[in-house]
Length: 491
Image 1 (cartoon, rainbow, N blue to C red):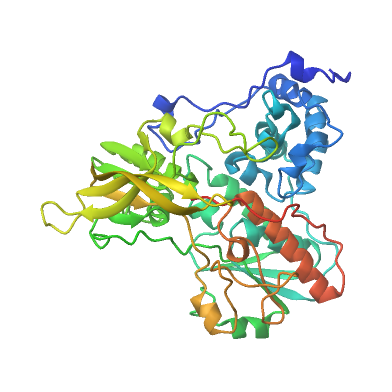
Image 2 (cartoon, rainbow, N blue to C red):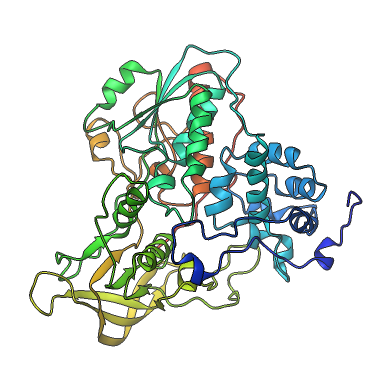
């Protein structure tokens, strides 16, 4: 199989690593993905890569992953070299290999008129093999710079920033306000979508490389930013963007209406044995507001908790199954694809706008939603600017409502009070070097860009580390990361 076969895409159909049967996986919290894969299968999938002269897949990847290179190395059975190429641009490829929606795949040249290379499956297989073979080991720096950096937040952006800075020789301490490290990789994404041992082994690697972690420390309200600046030569704020978007309609104060992320966090804590379940869907009629990834995770979690029925409502119209004329390749397709959560059951409802929550029996708890069916007028950027109401006063029964319509910036009021500024989007304002108005204080990830994908967070963390290294040393040998200008949004 060492001979080059440029027609592999003609001889092998696209066959990504599959998922477990929905009827089986809905009964547990183990990962939804097939637990194993065959090497010959993945080598065939790597052979499908055409090694394009202009690899558009790399343009679709925010961190510029060297996709054709590791596709070819997998095809040739050179797995350890493939892992090295993967790690050259991505600190935590399992984070993306398991959870990223893979914008690289619809940008693949094959996707123009055929099935894209199974890039995400190849990425996952490479890093799986790396852990299995013991190839992923701590890489502490040869020498230390004597500089100390505080990273606030232990999600993908904070961890990537910390690892890069540590490898540049700086002493790094990561502060996390929660009791567990990993940010939303640990407390937000459900276990069945991303098993937490995958975070734990990376944290072990980072500790052995010399990074210090401190949990249960909230910077801003408890430990001031000024105190942190006195103790460290630079600070990176990677605090995420968990300021929830609200549904401000009559009845919002009723019991049984919760934001989706606290719901997921409570279940993750229960699965880890750290807390009792705070919000339980068992036997209830559940309505999830929001058609994005968080909404899908809420739907799947409600299934596993034993909900009587689940409906997921999107304010947008159902996308077409094929690309519209104004959405050509290689742009990200605005098409409909059933989520893993709806594969397991539940109803997907589109173009419904909530106008009220109702308490029929006056016990203080929600019993139904009132919605209107709408058609939206969009501007040139695809934003909703006006609506036509097609049908009013539609009632949907609900005992539990989960609001998962996105986020509107960082939870940063305490930092603003201490000298930082917010952009119009609610994110932390920075200059081109990712520095805030306070000298030596940088921002990274969702806190700077707004809620987006894990791959963007990793890239942001890597770039912040490069800017901080330059600030401390006058120049940096750390590689740049992000390749495009604006992240996708999810509502």
